Length: 233
Image (tube, rainbow, N blue to C red; front, side, top):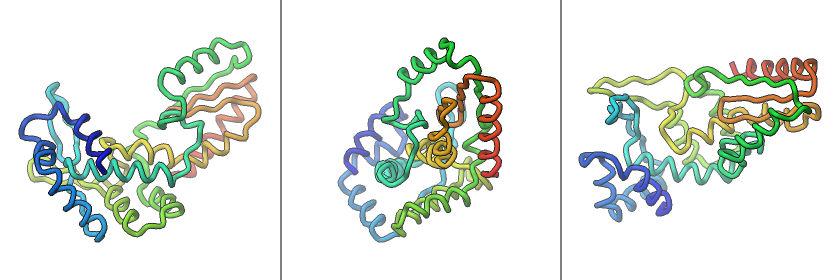
């Protein structure tokens, strides 16, 4: 938890003076004990996300500091439990970022892969089915305490001016956990393409790239991808 606390302090060091991160930092030892007791007892409850306005005038939903800390701890734990394909490059340790850009550029210039498809899932985070994702998570997560926290996360609410809204589907974007779950959700699709000998498949969050030697191979691969995506609803 201490590592997650250091991470949280760094990511929220620019927050305004009245933000709850400063309360958490000042009373860290006491708050740490309180959070651990609640987590171990299975009584920890996430608060509704708050809709705030950034300095640039943009509205953004954020978690309370304590909730963000717990979500970071959950992420570190779930990274050891959930299978994520190496073809999903936005996950830490999978060669994303600049290395991914360089490799994609090289493939684009290569005559070996003249046929390329780039597509994405519009509003991916907002269209993930929480019920389906929870069922997937239940196959790998055995701890009732962790499953309870995941269920709360998937059934999140957003508050603005005393008005609460609970989305019927989708997962929140503003957390350390979201990218991992977004990667895990489509693992079966990634795994299917791992064994594809004739094309190169790469995923970065909700963006897909397929490189093929012929138009026929590309059309077959795209059809295969569409079948997978349709199965998620």
